[in-house]
Length: 166
Image (cartoon, rainbow, N blue to C red; front, side, top):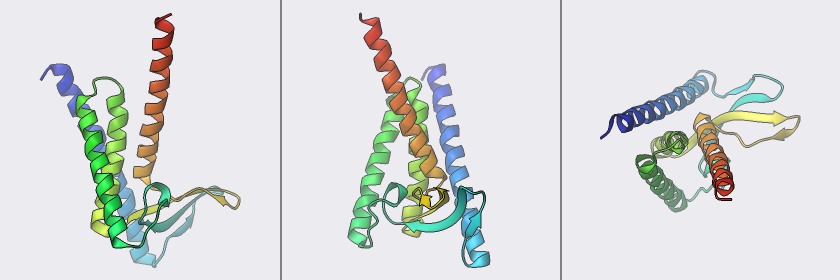
């Protein structure tokens, strides 16, 4: 393994570990508040609340199912996608490796919760007046950020390649 590849692997490992740690710490903090006060409903600002909901679906509570078979199927699909992202991290040699690391770390944080709690604790509630976005967590932030960055990188690289071939 070349020195640059070793540095990339170490840096990606640090990113993944830091994101998973931040995700776990924030979730444990919110869950400890629930243990102390029996609920969490904190008004942080006029547009941000901390409000715990248990998500048995996929991202942002979509496809929330109560049936254990469907839940297990979704969890299996998430695990397979996570393995695919991990393989992509190992094979990617450019800046995309960092964005894939964000996605992988967020997926691992939520996958841990799905396996340990049988649901993912979501607690960040963004809203404008009475319009509330889906409640989410720190892992969801990194998954979303990684996907957005990958899309932007692909658009920029595509634009660059198209202009260079003219």
